[in-house]
Length: 315
Image (cartoon, rainbow, N blue to C red; front, side, top):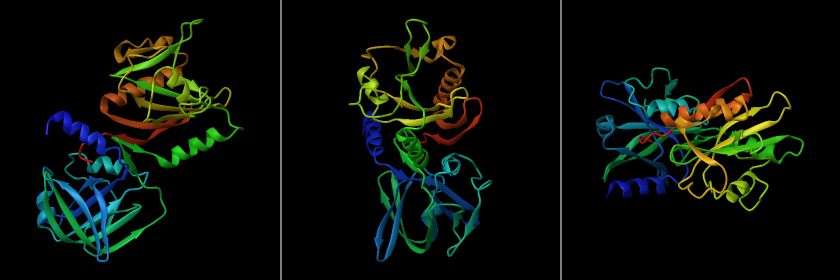
């Protein structure tokens, strides 16, 4: 398969939202090992079987192929850092991670939404991966919100729900905006009277058919964002407006009807309407270069970046 076809297939498969798991076991020296995987599914309820897929290039492949047991921990929404750790090339991925042992002795990640302690049932060769099927020896779950992965991004479901509810509350003053990227260029609109630049905004996210909503205004600019992710949520200290900004990448921005796409290194930051916009855009550019995005939550002048997401091909 050509590289372009492989990329397109990966993108198509990424349209299916999944949970994120940590697959663990013990190596021949009883040292804990593990990796991040979203290729996890139920196989059978009777007998109780689950499966995960392991890349043949994984440096843990020998331990999983010869070992007799493994475990799968389904991560919660506040465990993105664990996903990133186990998807990285770190030598000791368990160094700062809390875990415990159950029936088989395979590590279980503490605080996970669910876990399955398994005895290996089958190890099947399948293309560039192996399929590992396990018989569930013990399991447990709770009502936490799971970590969700979609199109190379983590999705913070609970925060998304809170923001949508806030937008529906008529007593809350809301401004919704978007940082739109096309080929490492950012879309900025211009106030003709002042020459100041600003991001597309509206009082609600809405639908493309709603001209007064953000998605409607973008549609009128010939900008369609089918995929958009939370980027910043903060409150204006002057008038207590809640500002909710999304980020999105578009495949074609050449026909935009208003505004201009600025190259990252030629953005006239001094022309942006306020300091909050300047800080937000600089953070976007930095995180874009790292292919790692977070969500800023707090006040306009203070807060923290949380829900860190990283586009990682190991997931």
